[in-house]
Length: 139
Image (cartoon, rainbow, N blue to C red):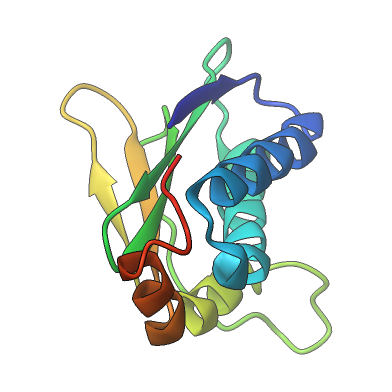
């Protein structure tokens, strides 16, 4: 599932709603909370830190058997880094949340311009077993 969003703070809520519907269509309710938080952090970083005029943000969601992959593509080349903010800072902890919630995450440079920041969340064993038994469907 691929979507493009205007680089504006409103796109965060819209992308969250889109991911929520996608996860529901895939029958994956148990990863919803973590997936929505991860997406929020990644897309908020793209909205806040990308300074390339006229470029959109692209989200991509992939159901890969035993996991869900969330990607946020933007047109900026600098890669996000996991840093320790000062205790009094009100921003700067988003990637710590992504690191804590995701089983894997990273950054992949685009060939022409920009990058994809991605995170992979494992589907719990009991939900995968239900899917294998046909109790949950893929949309």
